[in-house]
Each structure stands twice: as C-alpha cells, then as structure tokens.
Image (cartoon, rainbow over all chains, first blue to last red; front, side, top):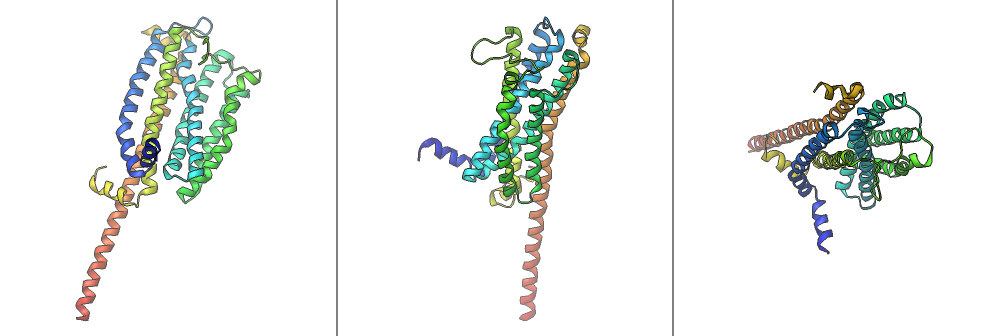
Amino acid sequence: MNIIPLWLHKLSSPPVFYRFAGALRPWFLWSALILGTAALYGGLVLAPPDYQQGDAFRIIFIHVPCAWMSLFAYFCMAVAALVAMVWRIKLAEVIAMECAPIGAAFTLITLITGSLWGKPMWGTWWTWDARLTSELVLLFLYLGVIGLFNAIEDRRRGARAASLLALVGIVNLPIVHYSVLWWNTLHQGQTVNLIGQSKIAPAMLWPLLMMALATHLYFVASLLARARVGLLAVEGGKQWARELIAEKADA
Amino acid sequence: MHDFLAMGGYAMYVWPAYAVFFIVLAWDWIAPALRRRELLNELRGRMAREQLRRQRAAQSNTQQEGASA
C-alpha cells in the first residue's frame, strides 16, 4: 500500500482519530480566534466607510465569510457522505453528520446578517429573490439532514440515510452560487473574484479574506470537537472508549 | 469612540449582525461540549452498572457453591 492511503487508513480508525482530533483542535481554534480578531479590527476600525453604503457595508466582513462557509460546509458534508455511502467508513459517517449543525449555524448567520444588511440598503428585511431563497433552501437541507439523522434510532443507519439526503441536496450548491448571475436579483453580484480583479479596495479586501480564513479554521476546530463526541457516541461500548473513560475519570 | 459605536447611523444594523455572529458560533462551540459531558456521564453510568452486575453474579455464584457443598 502507498504511504498516504496507509496513513489515511490508520487515521480512519476511531481511537487514532479521536486522539489526533483532540491534539489538533486547539491549534485550529486559537489560530481562528487570533486571525478573526485581527480581521475584525481591520474591518471595523481600519477599513474606510463605503462611498455608497457608509458604515452599513461593514456587515460584509461576517456576512460573506459565513455565506462561503455555508456552501463549504455543505460541500465537506457531501464528500464525507459519499465516502460513507460507498465505503461505509464509520468515521466518514460521523464527519458527514457533524458537518450539518456547523453548516446550519453558518447559514443561519448568513440569513440573519443579510436581513440586517438588506433593511437599510434595500428597504426590506426579506425578499423572495433567487439568492435569498436558495440560501433558505440550504438551511432547510441542513435541518433535514439533522432531523433525518436524529429520527432513526440506529445511529449508523440514520447517518447513511441522512447522507443520501445530503448527496441529493448538493444540486442546490450551484444554484446558490450562480443565482446572482442566472437571475436578475436584488442581491448584489460577486464582489470578490479568485481569478481576476476583485471589485473591492485592498483596505476592505484583506479583512474580508482574513475573516474567511478564520471561519474556515473555526469550522475545522468545531468539526474536530464534534467528531470526537460523535465517535464516542457510536463507539461508546468499545474497548478503547471504555479505557479512555476509565483512565480519566474527569474526562 | 462614540463615532465608532454610532457606525455612521447604522449602529442598529451593524452591531446586531455582529452579535448574531458571536452568539450563534458560541452556541456551536458549547452545544457539543454539553453533549460530550452528558454522553460521558451516561457511559460511565453504564460501566458502573455492568461492574455491579458482574460483582453480584460472582457473589451469587460463590453462595451457590457454598450451598451445594
């Protein structure tokens, strides 16, 4: 076996992953907190007010990173769900299911901050426009995955059923992403372009990208923490889990 | 400082947006920690009950042996 598949194979063993995730989690959390603080300072203090939107545009520094995360978390969930369906790897099932609440949290933040931004700029909290509606559908997909998983008594069967739903729901991702191009919407178009020129001043761009990095790091930290709990829940009766619980009574 | 908090007149939109961001993510961080504590208590309880059952079984075995002897 090749060295990387061998390593992955080892890592997918629940006790190994449990320890690995526990060791990595603080690094991701602290780097997310440090970068996030710097990004907040850059966005709220250093960046100048927008010439059209005044200071209301500062919502962008949380709205856009969270919107990206709402799609990224779904993508991660779908990849883990595919692995879970094809190879029936326990760890992939746990990761797919633990992505859902984090993605739902980011989607909720996106919708609420968007609403708070829409009121002063568009004059309305909500409109049934393509971007907003598809993002709301994304939230319902997350809630559907969480609900289906919790509705089935057997955790592994529940995870596989919810994984199937997660895979079907992936059709919504391009709709969210391209909705501002495909339809005439109230929502503004893309501001940041990975390929080519972004339509934003550097003083506004760096806090935005730094916050995006911070939310990605936070996502990993939260996923590792949740995956540990999820693994303990499925593997609670196994020897490694018993040893772990017995060895530290205060764990 | 006052200007900063006023957010150019948009304070009632900007600050609640940031508050939502922090509250939802704080919930995201706390929820699994609570679930973990609950789960560990449950598993510990299960292990303790099993041990008790084993002890009882061992005790009744020795009693039975004593009675048949």
